[in-house]
Amino acid sequence: MAQNSAMSFIQPEAVLSHWQGHRRLTRRLIEAFPDDQLYTFSVGGMRPFGLLAQEMLAMTVPMVKGIVTGEWDYDEDKTPRPKQDMLRLWDEATEQLNTYWAKIRPEQFAQQAVAFGQYPGAVHDLILYVIDNEIHHRGQGYVYLRSLDIEPPPFPDRS
Image (cartoon, rainbow, N blue to C red; front, side, top):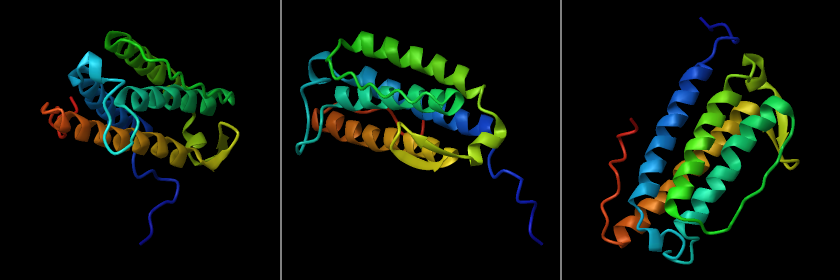
């Protein structure tokens, strides 16, 4: 028998918890990078991890803020910054993510939006894209750290 189509597979709070687990792991990856390699080291022509982390920052809060307010501001700052500044910005974004997430109405997740004026899709798909993008770039960071002979944080530990 088919279940009620209005029933969610996963509740918004669980999605946020899952995302925050990924963010905690990515933060530990940023911490593991040597300061002098964060914006200089790359493999195979890929961008340095500092720039990848800045892209993640440019997408996370602006995505949820756009969902809540309809204001889609994407401003990827590509200015290299000390690791401690990056970590501070990461922590601030985490707090902002929590604040905006709490303002997303449950029915909005199924609604259509055009993120940043050019990416159409269901809100839940846009959110999953930002999470997937972080996971993808964190994977690049794992390759970088291993190439630098640095053991990255254990992947399953998202606490």
